[in-house]
Amino acid sequence: MSLRSLLLRPGMAASVLFLVLLLGWILLPGLFATHDPLEAVGASLAPPGAEFWFGTDLNGRDVYSRVVFGTRTSLLAGLVAVAISLSAGGLLGMLAGYLGGAVDAIISRAVEVIVSIPGLLLSLAIISALGFGVDKVAIAVGIAGIPGMVRIARAETLRIVGLPYMDASITSGTGRIRGILTHVVPNASGAIAVVAGIDLGGAILSVAALSFLGFGAVPPHPEWGSQINEGRMYIATAWWWTAFPALVAGLTVLAVNRLSRGIGTKETR
Image (spheres, helix red, strand yellow):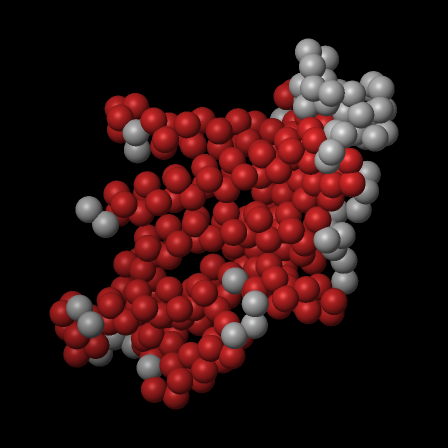
């Protein structure tokens, strides 16, 4: 994506800049944070100001620094979840679309059964089996996202299988596994990757929601969902404790979705 195209699309440019900032928070949080995220550095529930940009929490910890350090946990958990759903769902969807027959029927029926269960409820059931922790939350969200990825990969594979060059490949004696690797994967990967980028926003929200419910990061470890949960009881008197982590999480989802949809629009041209 060229600099000129970004300048012509200010929404896309703002999304890219914000995601670059988040990347800096992930790689070098100590460079961007103004205080130690685990230490009491000010008065309890101090409002936002020049010293504490996002205010402080009940224990006098800097909310901004905790948001910065919590970025790595929140985003990496979302990326792990999408990686799980992309790898497992993409493989199953391609197999179902390419092989067809009994394989397609079994995978499709299994997906329909799982889709009937709300994603958050399915994630909670998986966490109950795996245990608590951010890593378990990422795995649960990833597994819950597999059915949707199966559907996308299957639909894209069926589209590719119906193209003339695939008929020529099958007629020439190309094996099924080789056909998937040489024809289906390269041609379907673009569309699937765009969907995965859009799903990343949902995964970040799901991770934050489960952490909000107490299944993710263990206090005092900073994480966006747990920070929102910590401040919810004081939202009337210390709105910043909840508002700023929620704002950063919301902007992250918007930026990821805007960039993914922009790339998707370019792919379809």
